[in-house]
Image (cartoon, rainbow, N blue to C red):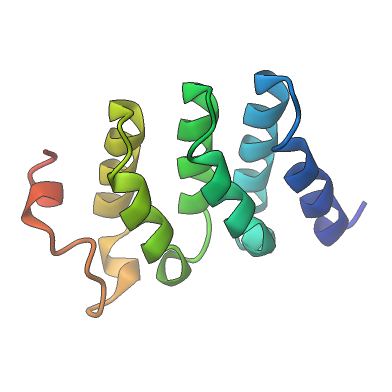
Length: 116
């Protein structure tokens, strides 16, 4: 199966009734990295998943995509009520600051730099 077909299957699995399937789908999209860029919208929806492990896996999958394309999604995820999602986003932003470039608004946030 080519990457595009696999992305389609994994996007469908993000809506599965079983949280384990949804988490594994997000993890699979993370492994595909930039080849999974078509999944960004589905991963944003997964940030609101009822299962915390799925939400964190969605953050990691978003983090595997081109950092310049994920600013809005990560900004939105920072407002999550789930502290695990917030921590995952903070860590991701700190680790990809140089890749985001000088126009990034995320890495300039002093709270992120302090890990707050």
